[in-house]
Image 1 (tube, one colour):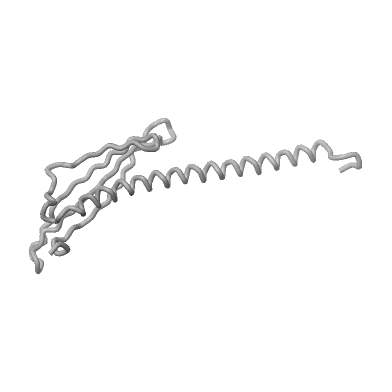
Image 2: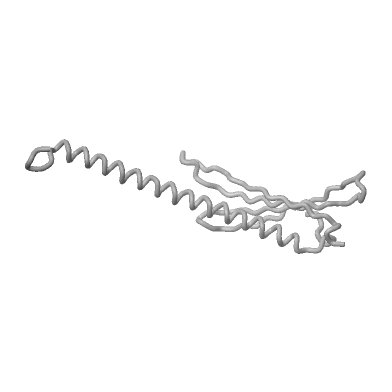
Length: 137
């Protein structure tokens, strides 16, 4: 540094450092906001699944018949289309002490997101619940 002020080299080096710091900070905030969006999206999917399971579990055990085919609901949120499919089936426990018929409820939610290459990636999440008739004696 000379007595009159900063040299051109010193000013350019400090500008490059400041630009690097600002760009790094911007990238951090971008990554944090996209991660927060993904977390909100997954929370919404879990809420859809839990809602369907709670509706089914609130029904009396004997009135919950296995579905002949999957039941489907469509939802739109966050600018995306979500499809919730739930099925019910029975499982025999032949040979067990009680010879019970457990009911399994599956809830699957599917949605599409951009894959970053101009295409679309299919996402899905599955949640299961098992109902025992002894809970309702």
